[in-house]
Image (cartoon, rainbow over all chains, first blue to last red; front, side):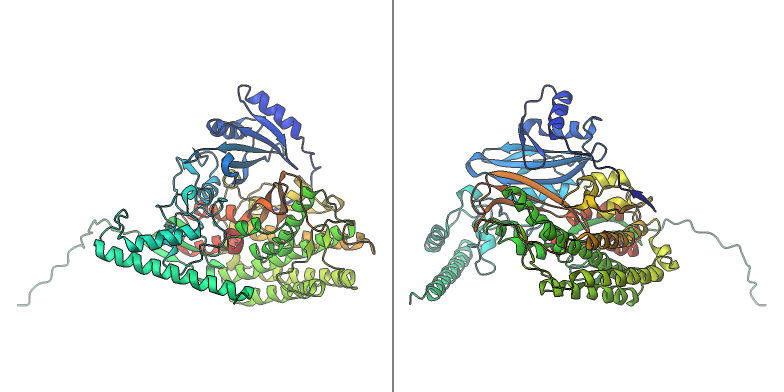
Length: 241
Length: 383
């Protein structure tokens, strides 16, 4: 083991990084914007994989460390996927962003370039519903494996999903895509309606219709009961009788 | 006449030895997983052929919760991500918020923050050394010796903040209150005491034959692979890359001190241990200089702080060197009093993702040591 004395710190020149990108990728169309520390380049989703590859492989950029990969939900303006890269050789960094719009946001994976992106992409996928095309193992990472919710979307309620165990998982799964997810009141109504008319639309594998209806009715009963209890408790806490 | 027994040469039977791969589940409740971490090992005899890690058992949704609280309110979550390096994480949070809002903390507050964070690094590495000793087979001695010293640091923290683990002491713009009167004297005493404690641990563990036999050339991670996996901190330095944010992207007042960056040359488990042991000594060096330089009086909170912080729309990725690597907070403000997005980049999350690479091909008993050498805190991996 050796010890190295600290080298003179190089000052980051973010303006220089933008010029480098213009030099390396002259055809690339990007918008540069200063953030508090790094320079942020906004690129088109189709260009992203190429930009990350060039950032890593070009000797002038040599951005070999993917230090952060995340996303931001801008609601109607789409989901922004954010990559923070750093070059250990030149000691400069950059932030690359791309905006995904539309019903089913998807983007090419960069796991072929940075192995460290594998878990980060899985996390973004489960938290924001962004599909990474070509990802080798697109399972949930932090959440339960068959839970199909995207909690970090702004449309996802913060605390309203706290239902009795065994109810919430089924309710929040595939039949409600994130943008069409009803509010708690609508959900209660819908659950009640489902109890009235035995719903057939749900392909619950090997249950007979009667069993299914009974199950759903029992479930919605439990949901309703839990909601009533919670509402009563809230009223009690507020002192409304 | 008795039958004659004819001794013949034994016939060697050529036979292929059939083996079946076996799946072994380790965790989530397992003493050597350092928390709630589960991995499924596919083994062929004693050799690990595949690893599937499962995380998320400690996921508490801190990022979502932070979006619902104001900038100061979510500070408490930082104590609970990496609970062994709470000061380091709090520091990243307050620094990110300060830079977003354009606030500057007074010099004295910066010194106190730095001293506490460096002590916290020593605390975390002591915890690593103790737990790692148990992994390797010291059965308690290393653990209790390390914890004895760790207790002293916690006593010091308790004297400053009133708490032993969840400090919540840093504030946007400064500190919650003055540190106690004998802060500097206690700090000097503690540095001396810890030097002796680290030397004791060093004498017990570093040159131990069993330790070397079990750790040398186990779980090797090359520099290229480490960088490609996003590994940072002592693990990356053990692989031979001298990358330390305190030097490479200097923040706060780190440019005022003299110290060295320990770097390994083989990238194996033993190097990771050595790097962390040396980092403790270097941290104590920094603390000693900081205690000497620290101004004796002056404000600890910036003046004229707004009651409610409403930073102009902007974004920041603030990163600092925690005991496990680059701890970053990506904060996006939209002009309101709550962050629009707050992402925690946890070093262990990325360090742990290299586990598969390190473990495949090693013996199953070494898998425990390799996992121990990552020094995971699951609260930070899962957030």
